[in-house]
Image (cartoon, rainbow, N blue to C red; front, side, top):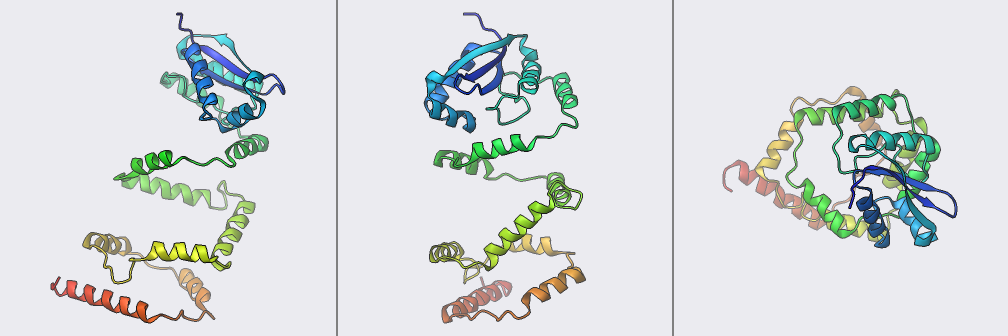
Length: 275
């Protein structure tokens, strides 16, 4: 069997919409697409929904061009830019062909996309494709396991912090409309009435936190280190003062008072070296 590399498309013969991809082994890639679509486990949610809606007989798989394996990504990007496939969620050719990009290929892709922004139509298509999509329990567990024991370097943490600051600054990518939506959503969560179910969930999640159960020495040390040299600005103090004005202190139950008292006793006993 001859293994050939190239660019392909999956076409909906009813409405003409298509998906464009590339591979160093086109026959295998076709089989992979078909198997995933039949099992309704395809990574492209937009294509999967359309496949279920129109049926497998409404789609054809065909080759657009053959090329050398190292050129598949370049030609795939050219086809995406020229044909604007409706089922492609990302406008940039991905590294799903089984071959690694060379530095030269990365540079060509980078130069080709400088100054190109996504259209509102494409962004909306990506949003619509994700609607109603939820991760399976197996996927959630894999994501959770992948983060266990994961730590970030000081440089990475600094870059993440600076990135968020830039994003939410006046010159950043977050528009005023988005700011208003975020503000409104936050106000609704803070001031809106909670259902009994939501209150119960919060209560269960908070059990054992600060109610007679002391933090570990390591946790206390980390909290202490994070606050060293941290001073609140006058503006911050003023805002905190304004938010507390007119708000009555919440009443504490006897159980809450007892738990706080026990927690304080444990903390003092630890400081005296009795525990």
